[in-house]
Amino acid sequence: MKVVILAGGSGTRAYPYTEYLPKPMMPVGGKPVLLRVMEIYARQGITDFVISVGYRKEVIIDYFENRTLGWNVEIVDTGAATDTGGRIFNCRHSWARPSWRPMPTDCRMCRWMNCWPSTAGPAR
Image 1 (cartoon, one colour):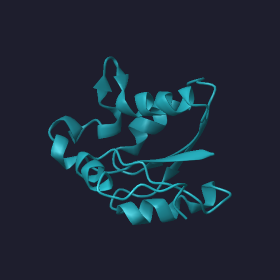
Image 2 (cartoon, one colour):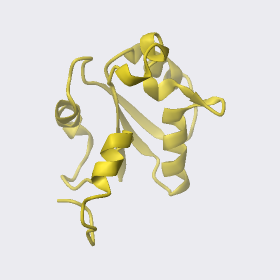
Image 3 (cartoon, helix red, strand yellow):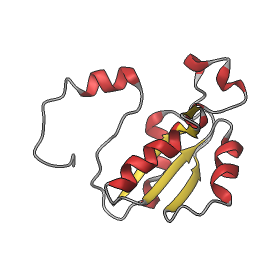
Image 4 (cartoon, one colour):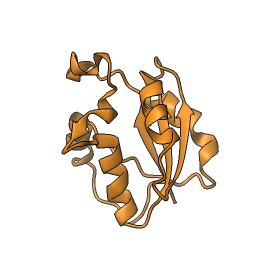
């Protein structure tokens, strides 16, 4: 199983902090929030990641370029102006099966997802 993490938005709601640092790289307890999300998945045994980057992509690329984490990390440049659907579409080559489930990290999206009826299995 692979996890696709959408990390390419401009983070306008976190401005001015995101002027130079993309939102996924903002530190939480001394580590980028992106790394913390990946650690949560790794503790569950999922260590294959696809990170969709765009805005300030060089910061994320530089961070993972020379790190040995024991995970498979693929970084896909999906463009700075690409919307959510476009980012997912541009990463489609990275997974073998078309089965996936979105994992929102946006607060508004989390509230919206909680309104969905629960399902017995992955979205198809």
